[in-house]
Image 1 (tube, rainbow, N blue to C red):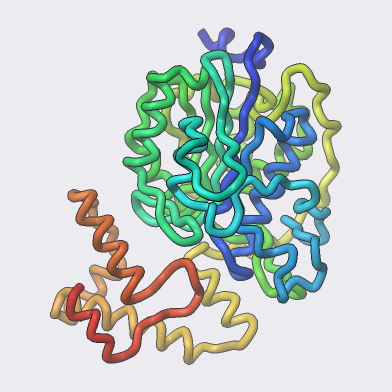
Image 2 (cartoon, rainbow, N blue to C red; image 1 turned 45 degrees about the vertical axis):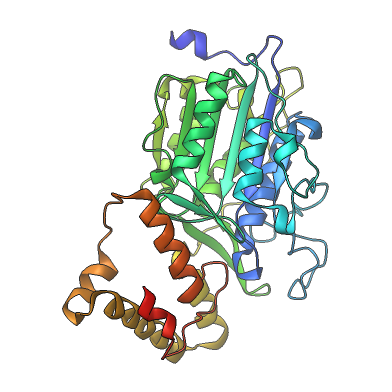
Length: 373
C-alpha cells in the first residue's frame, strides 16, 4: 500500500494549487511574502498558472512603507518573490466565501476577482497552502473569518463529487491544528499545520517580519531539495525539527508521496536545487505578539503595550463581572461547545473591542457597546 502512494501523479491527472494569504497591512507582511514564495516554488516546478489560484490582498509592492517598490522578499537579503505572481483574488475579493467557491470549482459564486477556480477531477492532485492569522476553529481573512466546520463541509463536498484524487493542505496560523481535528482519514486528504505560528526574519529596514517559521521551513526545504526525491514526510520532519507543535491530520500514508506530486508537474523537469545561506538568528516571536513587537522595536512604546493589556483586562471584567476570573480567562483556552455562539461572540468582539485585522485597538474606556457583551 505504501508503494502505491509513493509514485508521482504520472497518469492523466493534473496538479492544482490554491495559495492564500489571509491578511493585509504592512505589519502582516510575512503572510503575503509566504504566499508569493509558495507561488514561485510551484511555478518553477512546472505547474502552469492556469492551474494555480492565488488569493492575496496585494498591498505590499506599492505600499508607502515599501522602500523597494515592486519587491517583496521572504528571507533576509532574499530574492524578489513578488515577480510574476498571478492576481486572481486581491483586496476585498480575498474572502472565505471566494476561497470555498474556488475549492468547490464554483466560478458562478465568486465575487470580484478573476473567477478562476479549481477545475480538478478524479485523477488530479490538489495542494492548498494558507498563511494567515488564526484562533481556535478559525482562520482570519482580511475582513472576515473562515471557520473549521465550513472548510470541512467543502472538503467533504469535494470528496463526494470526486474533484480530486489526493489532496494536501499546509496551514500556517495560530491554532491552525483546530481547523483539521475532524478531518477524516479515509478521504485521501493529508494536512499538516503549524498549530502555534511564529514570525521570523525581522527586517530593520522594512520594520516588519519577512516570514513565518513553519512556512519558510517547508519552502526553503522545497527550494534546496530535489522534489522528485523528497517526500512529504521528510519535508514534515524537517519542519517538525525546527517548529514547535507542528501536527499531521487525515490520511497520513499520503506523506510517503513525493513532494513533486503536489508542488510540481510530473511531466516537467524538477527545478535545480538552490543553495541558501543559513540565517543564524531567525528572531522567532509568537505571531499574536507581532504588532506589539513591531511597535516596541519602532517606538519603544512600553506604555502603549501596558495600556493594551489593561484594556483587555477591562473587557474580561465586563464579561465576567469578577476580577478573580481575569487570569483564568486570559490564560486558559476553553472548549468550543456551541459553534454558532462562538461565531457570534467572535463577530461581536471584533466589532466592539479589538479587530485582528488592524494593529490598533478600538476600545474607548467608556465604550457603551461593552455592556452588550
